[in-house]
Each structure stands twice: as C-alpha cells, then as structure tokens.
Length: 207
Ligand SMILES: C[S@@+](CC[C@H](N)C(=O)[O-])C[C@H]1O[C@@H](n2cnc3c(N)ncnc32)[C@H](O)[C@@H]1O
Image 1 (tube, rainbow, N blue to C red):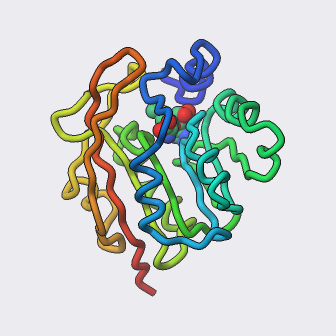
Image 2 (image 1 turned 90 degrees about the vertical axis):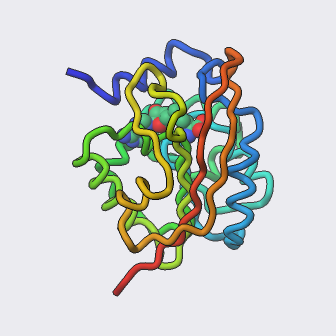
Image 3 (image 1 turned 180 degrees about the vertical axis):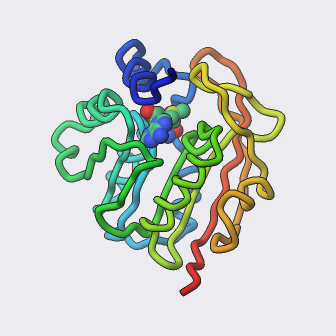
C-alpha cells in the first residue's frame, strides 16, 4: 500500500533539494502574492508542504518574524533548517501530514505550492480543508498553487489533480473568496515546462 510519508522521506533522502522538479531558485509569484496580501511582519505565516523551498528564507530576510514551515518529510525540513543555519531557530518547523494537522496557533496566511494537488481522495481533500479552516484566522489569506488544467498529470511520480478556479472553489466551499489568480510556467531543473496556477483567496469565515 502507498505510504505517503515514506514516499516523501525517500524523495528528500535520494535527491538533492536542488534537483527536485519543483525546485525554484526564486519563488517570485509566491512572494508577489504574499506582498499583495499586505500581512504585517509579525503576522503568522505558514508554508504548508514547504519542503526544502527557499520561500521561508526570502520571507525571513524581508523581516517576517512569525514563520512556520510544515512538511510530512523530516528530511525535507532538516535540509531547509541546515540551509538556514542559525536563523532556523527563529522559525517554527512542524512535521505533520496536512490531512491530520491540528494547528497549534492561528495563522494569517497559508501558502501551499504543489501540495493540495496531491490529494486525489475526496476524504483527504475534506480533511485538508478542515485543517485549513481551523488554522486560518477570519479574513486570513490563502495562497494555493496547483498544476493548471491541461498541465502535468503527475508530480514526483504521483497522480495529481489539476485545478482551475471553479474546481478549487468547489473543494474549498463558499467561505473562501477568490481575489486573484495568476499563471506561471515553471521550468524544472531538467528544463521541462510545467504550468501552475496560483490562487489567492480570503477566508470570509461565517460565524
Ligand atoms: C511538490 S513538493 C513542493 C514543495 C514546496 N511547496 C515547493 O514549492 O518547493 C510537495 C511537498 O509537499 C510535501 N507533502 C506531500 N504530501 C504532504 C502531506 N499530506 N502533508 C504535508 N506535506 C506533504 C512533500 O514532502 C513535499 O515537500
């Protein structure tokens, strides 16, 4: 039976984080969307399935002081911590499966690049949305990037679900209002093109 955690632990054991297909030297679009959310520098930001992404390095350098990186793979987190050196101690590192995540404190911004799209089972997507709603403050920001409809069908050898806005809204429900969507052609380290769409939502929690 497929074991998600083992899969991701092996990915980060067997490959350099610079060689994985999703590697980005500059997370340009993620940063632009975080900036457009206009969160304060001490607002809590979580990068879900952040892996060894350098988004956290950029945000930390920009002065964001309340950063969390969550990943199912301890190897991925270890690699990011090592890269950040001394600064790593100022960041919260959580090893967890996002479908079973119980946030230890509320967040103002939730960022997910290429994680939700791995959830091919409806029950996992529902659990993710439950974790998200528990974690995000009212009027908090959600940034999700997934492969575009017509884009790649697999990532890391696993089936994924491609999204457009309508399909994603159907998963998230009416408490999330779409503010913006942007497309990106990501060039992998092996020089292949992958089309992503980034969606920026606001969580309008109904009380
Ligand atoms: C395609 S990579 C993207 C990494 C990072 N977001 C980036 O853009 O560079 C997917 C990441 O999600 C993590 N992941 C996959 N399934 C997960 C889950 N159920 N819970 C938490 N992390 C997960 C993997 O370990 C991996 O680091």
